[in-house]
Structure formats: C-alpha cells, structure tokens
Length: 316
Image (cartoon, rainbow, N blue to C red; front, side):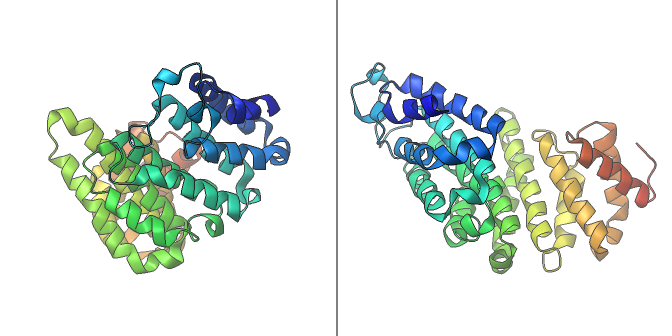
C-alpha cells in the first residue's frame, strides 16, 4: 500500500499513476480500514492533488506527457476515472474515519468537473463521484453537510443533454435525498419534477438513444423510490407507485430492481395505505421481476418472493 501511495504522489507518468489508483482501490477493499487508516491522510492528499491537476504526473515532464490534461479540456479518461473510483473506494472503507476536512477536500476537488462548460465525460464523472460520496459516507460528512449544494446541482444535471450525466445525476439525487431525509422533505416535489422528464424522454427516445435514455430513466425511477424510502410518510408514494410499477422490471439497469423491492418492503413494513391501493400492480410487477430473474441480489429476491406471497400472489 505504501508503494502504491508513493506512486500517486511522486510518479510522473499518467499511465503508471492510473494503474496505481486502480490497484490501490482494489487493495483497500481487500485489507479494510485497519490497514488503510494509518496511510489515509497521505492517500487523500494525493487523490485531491490528482483531482485538482496538481500531481507530478500532471505538472512535470513525464513519460507520457504528450497525453496532457488541459484544465479546460476533457480529463484523461483512464486516469481521472480511476481517481474518482479511488475516491469512492476510500470513503467506503474509511467511513466516518475519513473526517470532515478530508471529505470536504474531496468534494471541492471534484467540483471543477461539474461545471457546465466541462465536457460531458467530466460532468458525468463528477455526478457519479458525488453520488458515491453520498452513499458511502455518513450523512453528517456528505449528504446532510453538502445538501444545499448537491440538491440543486443534481436537479439541474437531470436536464443535461448527455444521458451519461443524467443517469448519474438521477442516481445522485435519489441517494442524497434518502441519506438526508430531513432537508429533503422541503424539496421532494422539486426533486421528483427533475426526475420525471427522464422517464418521459426515454419513452419517446429514437432508436439510437433508446438504450442510454432508458438507463437514465431506470435510475430516475429508482431515485424516486429512494426519495420515498427516506420519508414515506410525507412523500407522494401513491403517485410514485403509479409511475414505477408499470415500468417493472427495469432492464437497462436491472440492479435497480432491488431498490424498488426495498421501497415496497418498507411500505409493507410500515403498513402504508398506498401498497393496498396498488396491490394488483405490485403483485404483477413482483411476479414479472422474479419470473424474468431481474433481481440481481439474493436478499432482495427473497424479500420480493416473501412480499408476493404476503400479498396473495403465487410463488414465482
């Protein structure tokens, strides 16, 4: 781990640093927090330097200098995507041990990529990175602390012309509101209004954009579910169910079917009246998801089967 960390902060070749980021991310997932924490400050510092274009491989004459990384141009895809992945991996393993100062530094470092004038690949990377921070870090360090900045950022990005950006923005908006339900309560209607056009857009998408727009729509539908899970008592659950259930199973991003199942299980556990209102549609949707094997996670699959039986549906 020490060698890889030094490569991040000292090597002058982008290709070497890109591989080091990928290897370090895999290593920290394997060894866990006990081995990571002693080196965490140095690794975070190196990650921030890379995200702000200040690492030796970006500022010195290196072995692959000709690849360049102009601050006003597109980021080096391999290097910066690996840096963003490392950022999420560090937060996943370190959790609250990363601390507020380091978390703030990571948010600031990647914020330049979210600017409207940046290329779509940069904007998509920034949205994905911010979304992962909301998922992996405790709310006081991420979702709650940065809600006032992230909520309008994600909502605006849902109107981006790039489906890669809107897909990540939709995921981020749902993750943010789920992790910070108290501040989200005041913006639920606004958040849902930002997400709904992605579903309508996918339904009318031309053939060449259908897959990409459908993936963004799947994330938007899952985000609606996450928003309702964060505060089912005050969210417009009935309307969300009416929109989500006919779209199941989600196919372009089938992993999000587990998110919908979590939403339905929460409604059942709390005895939410909307579940009874939509019982027939829920039974059909769950049966289709199970029969088509569209729920990737076994715990969610088991929960879906149990809920289907609870609602009087035939076992899949």
